[in-house]
Image (cartoon, rainbow, N blue to C red; front, side, top):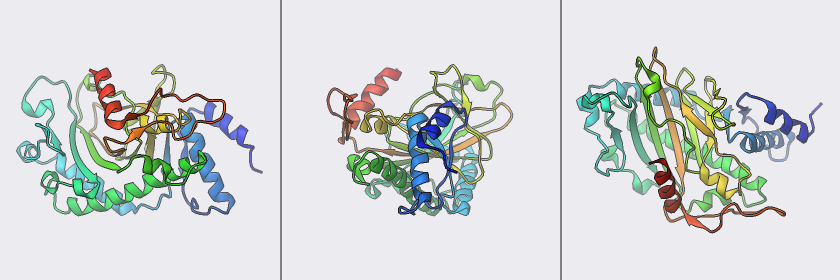
Length: 311
């Protein structure tokens, strides 16, 4: 016997476990299975701003290849990684951590980033050519992440009573970036800087590697809940822009990375951003509500304001 929708919402609000949702049957729009998945996604976005998906259709071999090649890159000699240094305003490449430069240990994180969509923004000179095969795998991976992200946004758009591509179209020209974070094992993990945040894009898809690397909070940091590692799952996380476009209906998750003194951590984020000049304002304000924004702002303006707040 199925539970009433109100009961499901109450359980979701009271639970301290990140929702895990199977997408098997999501396209069964005329059947109960599709309706159940839609409801589960919406409730997770309203109560958490984050959930995990399984049975998502992305080949597990592709996920393993992306993870393996990422790890292979980070174990390359420092001089090889620094060839792709993205300092100086370069679009994409490798972010050189302090420990590689011999400086005081402040942030042991290493990052490699690709601009993957729109296709015209791909600068393959900034995509590492080693290990062999990484470019081809990244291209396929980015395409699959685009499809998964757009499917979730389609569910949310329909729930808001809009056309299925309303949230995607609001981005004007979706800017997708793949950002791979690597935390070497370290003796004092608490020294890693700047980890707690909300994402400032519209949606993020995260692939964890073997161990949990993420925590989230719903009470402003009083309680941190670990997002468990689930083999073959992706973590879906809503950003600030989705919160604004939904007029606050969908949460943006407050989260942080988990660093371990005994083992390295790697996780692969696929961020979806609006175009810099895309106007951001609630797409629909429900009866009895007020708009949570006083006026439309461009995504670039919102980003600049957030960066100032972080300084």
